[in-house]
Length: 350
Image (cartoon, rainbow, N blue to C red; front, side, top):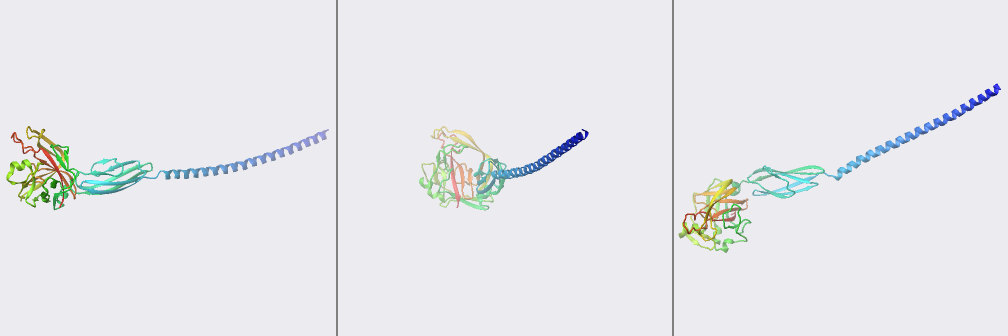
């Protein structure tokens, strides 16, 4: 019984041992399998992580390519005080300009800028976009009024046969330069019978001296001035308030330039256009460039008031507004020498 039991026990032990080995084998086998699976899973996970990271990298690069940086190019031409700016940009959502003269703007693309005085300036354009910012510069030289008037030493101007865009007659002296009769076309003097006066020449010298060459000995003159001051020298009369008048060229005339100054003009307003009951008024032209003359000098037309406001100027043309006394003052209160009208004329270099 003991043996059996022992045997039984031995068998039990054997059985138990055998079962245990099997279980250990199975456990070891399962554990090794899990480790292999884990390693494989880790390798796969690592691979996916690398692939995902590379995907994010290349995806990020792709996003940068879809938002390129802006670019801008400039080209500038100068005519007188005006800079004509051609601008081209890509990928820009905003623009900013610095003109180098203390002014700026947010104008988009090509436009123009008018300077108030000569000098060297740098035009800077800055554009911005989703991809960043870009800047372009252009240096310009603006000639001074004196340089354009005199050409640097001496320059002669003659009345243009083709009317400028500002030319015409204002029936009242006004600081807005409102025209009541714009001049259009060409050979306007021929239309009113004064074509011979296109030969008048006006020369500005850098030293401030000034000369007038009448050509045929005659100049344009206002009708009131001609009738009251030099009736014996009238050559041609017209129904337009402008006469042709004999004139001796001055020998000591000078010119002066007043830049960005106020000009006050004592004028008369003939409301009913009947030379009666004229209303005296003072008209102030704010911050203008104007010419004054001494020694019997003038430009364009001889009259009581020889001041000339420079409206436009470049090396190729000069447009001025001059003052015209056309109120004959039949009441004789002494105001016939005051201007009542304005005349805007364009000149070109000889």
